[in-house]
Length: 203
Image (cartoon, rainbow, N blue to C red):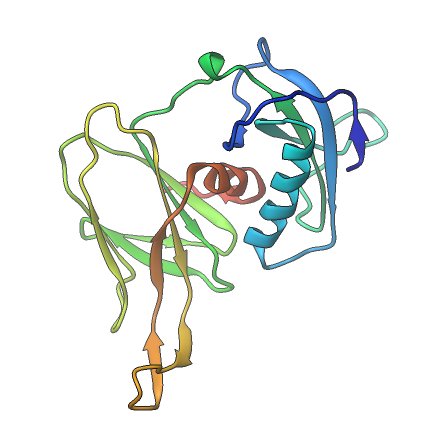
């Protein structure tokens, strides 16, 4: 922990991105040093430190240049400011689908037969219509396909597309399983953390 101003005693499990300034109480900050490809591990350690002081919301705190302007984000060194926000003051977001690319190469995906390319460590943000069926596919042989049908008032939806995987076949037959990409649903706290450290790519 880089800095602790105060602590808050609560049992909130969530850890969301801070939206409004008014009702959040600043508790402290944590600095991430050293680049890691394992974003889940980084999130896990930030989450653990946040919960030690009772934080349930966060925001990226840019380093500043000498003249006070914010520096460009650096994935190898950044600060996360930690806050406590009362549950009833949290803003619930509806109507958007986030797709994060965790691969080291450009990732091609198709959503309802429209093609997109997402660069490494970036994400797409698309509006969805409640009731409509969305088919998300990694567009390759042996790739994954996911179908979702959001309802009215559903929270935002989060997916991660990961790259080519080769893993041992544990079926007993032997050999390798080859997958050209997985699409997995993400929990909101982790997804909102990724939305801070990844770059939004415009569709």
